Each structure stands twice: as structure tokens, then as C-alpha cells.
Amino acid sequence: MNTVYKLIIIFLLVQCTAAAQSFYIKGVVTDDETGTPLANASIFINSSTTGTITNSAGEFQLGPFAPGTYEVVASFVGYERLLYVADLRTTSIRISFRMNKRNEEMRELLILPEETRVRYLEIFRKTLLGETNAARRAKVKNLRDVQFEATANRNELVAYCDTTLVVDNPELGYVVYFDLVDFYYNRATGESRFFGYTRFVDKNDEGENKRRWAKRRRETYDGSSMHFFRSLVNRQLKEEKFTVQNIYRKEMKQDGVPPKNITIQMGRSNAIDIAVPVTEDSLLHLYSDSGYKIYELKMADRLRVVYAKNTALKLEVTKNRIIGGQVRDGSISGLRPYKPPVLVDYRGRLLTPMAAYYDGIWSFERLANMLPEDYKPE
Image 1 (cartoon, rainbow, N blue to C red):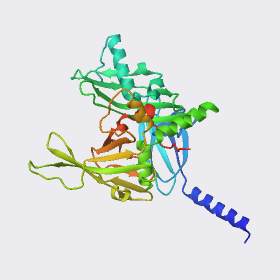
Image 2: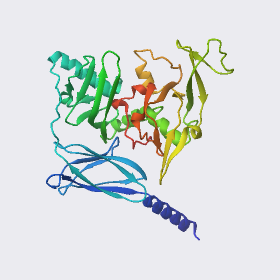
Image 3: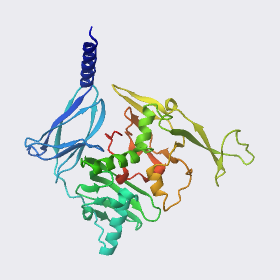
Image 4: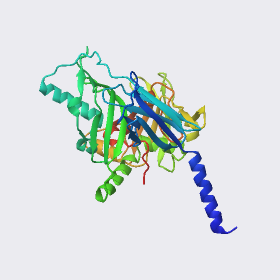
């Protein structure tokens, strides 16, 4: 057979295989009480650039998608937000979102003097966006929509917002739409947490801006938690310059003799940290035998992740502060289990973000220095 025809056949077979593994999410959005179609409702995949709005009949279509799980968010002004976890294994699916009008929650609004409210809004902004160059340049266009709830503890800040927050991020070239679900900050301890649903819109500018954004996105990606999880599931930790250790916390007896050839750090509690190198196969354990792979991370007391280079995030956050546990040439981060299991899919997406928390450099990853899950480095 002619070589050209062989190449054409191979190409067609590859195309057919790719098409066979591509799925779509279709559906309709209606008012639950009246059944009326809701036009211009926002439908998007959480933490991605994939999104659309419904047509005049309330219909939508997203895709194509590779096999996996996808968080589909439906949002419409004046209605309760809906979340559906789409499980795409063997076929496309159709979703019917029946939305209920939002009831005014019985919240005790915290009435603040204007000066105090401005200070609280700045705390909220820094906690949400971070304290990097990207965070300083980013602007929350409707920050004034954020309200604070009265709490028993005067040091606690609990924030909520009934509208979608719109964040312009000129450093990375995205407009970010963030639906806030939970926000907590303790002024005494510095403890903070926030959670919400995120949609990224690429500004798609040409010329110099496009080249600059591509460069900044790549710098943000290198050594990030997204970079690590993708390298882990692809069994490329060494090639991507990651070194990983399981940290075991051991209590020592007063006359205890530490094991040989082990680097030990002794704390006030007379405990030692023992670092044991791990590989991809020792970390990843198949959790679900479905059409696509879901892994459970088997961690000790802490997972220590060393990236061989100084990341852009490390260089920024260490300009004006001292962060313990870092090395001169390299970036050290960590992952601590909180509510196992910690699950990761075959694409490197952390499926249970509330099951663990970050420390080290990754703890400074905030909204202004985050990339959409469908980002692919050039």
C-alpha cells in the first residue's frame, strides 16, 4: 500500500478514536415553579474557561470533554445556584436544571462605620486575591457588594455576597467570575479560608499582551500545585524536577537513639520528623475502577514537595517576609491530610479540595495566582 494512503488511514483512525472519547453535556434551565425557560442563565465548568449561556428556550451545550467528572454550575440572577457533578464515562449526558428563586437569608448584617468597613473589605480582598504583584494589579469590580455577618467572636470576619464577584486580572489576562460560598478570617490567629465556584474568561488579546500573558501563565504554572498533581499522575515527578517525601512525626523517649542516616528535626515536644522518599506508585492507589482512573493519595502526617527551582510565587512572597523551611535554590511546599480520602483524577485534578490543606509556598496560591483547570502550558 502506498505510504501516503497508510498515513491517511492512520490519521483517520486516530481522529475516530479521539471522537469516540469525546462527550458533551447538554440540557435546559427552567424556573422550578412555573416551568418557564430561563434565557441567559450562566452554565460553566467550575474552575475552567469552559462556559456558555442558555438560549431563548433555556437550552445549552458544553463540550467536547474527555472521560472524567466535571462540576457543572448553573447560575442566574435572583435564583439559587445549582451544582451538578457530571460523570462522563461512556456517553454524553443531558441535565435539566430546575432553579428556585433565592429566599432572603436571615443573616444578622454587621453594621460598620465606613472607615472600619473599608478596612474589612481590604482584608477580604487580600485573603481572596493574595499579596503578589498579580493580586495588587487585580481589581474586584464589585467589591462593595461584599457584606459582613455579625458573629459572637469580634476577631472573626464572616463575609457573604449575593452577586457574582467580577475580578479583572491583567497580570494573567483573565476576567474571573467568582461565586462566593464561604469566607472566614480570624484577625487574632490569621486563620483564613474561602470557597466558591470560579469561571475564567480569557481576554484573548493579540500582540504583545498575548505573549506577555503566555509567559506569566507559564511562570505561574511552574512548580505550582497544578504542575505537581499533573506530574504525579503522569509519573513524571523526576522529569519535572519534583522531589517528594512522606513526613512521619515520631515521639522519642528521653534516652531514645534516632535511626542512622536519617535527618532529624527535634521540636519542643521531644518529637522528630522522619522524611521518607516516595515514588508515584507508592503515593497513588486506585480508588475507583471506573472508565477513567481516580487515585487516592496515601500520605503520612505530611507530604513534603520540593521543586528544584525558585518559583515565581516564592520569589514574590519572600521579598518582604521570611518563610521558614525554605532552601536558597528551590521551593518547598506541602500537603497535609485533613479529612481523607484525598482524591486525584487521571488528569491531575484534585477532586476533594477540602480534604487537605497546603503549607509552604502553595499556601500563598490565591485567586490572582491561579490558572483554570483546562490550562495547557505552551
